[in-house]
Length: 164
Ligand SMILES: [Cu+2]
Image 1 (cartoon, rainbow, N blue to C red):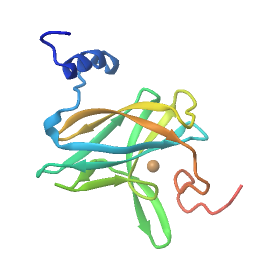
Image 2: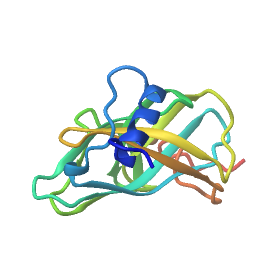
Image 3: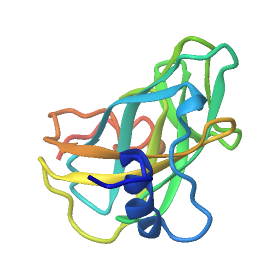
């Protein structure tokens, strides 16, 4: 038995060095829960991260940034529909999570883009990610790489219709 240190704190100590300076671990009081983190298996060096973000509090929150060691850069994107076209647009103010509700980052909607992948990602593997929220701070999690479904709406560019 280890005296003095609760298991959660031990885990925190083990994980902290992985993330470099200044990162905080998940704050249990933040009320934010992450579900279904997934990355469709990318064909090139760009991938998308999708997930559900649940707020169990009464304040709401805002996703500000996603980081992962497998990508050189990341961006938060929303999609905007104009007529029959769908465009990806940056979400510089982040992605809001409604109080007591849920934000869905899903194909055809908001997502995090992972750009400049440092290595290939294969279906079945798990990728560490860190999500930074306005109130909840940084929450570390793992995303699962899932097989790419045919006709994935993401990454084909705005209004592209041609098929290879
Ligand atoms: Cu995008």
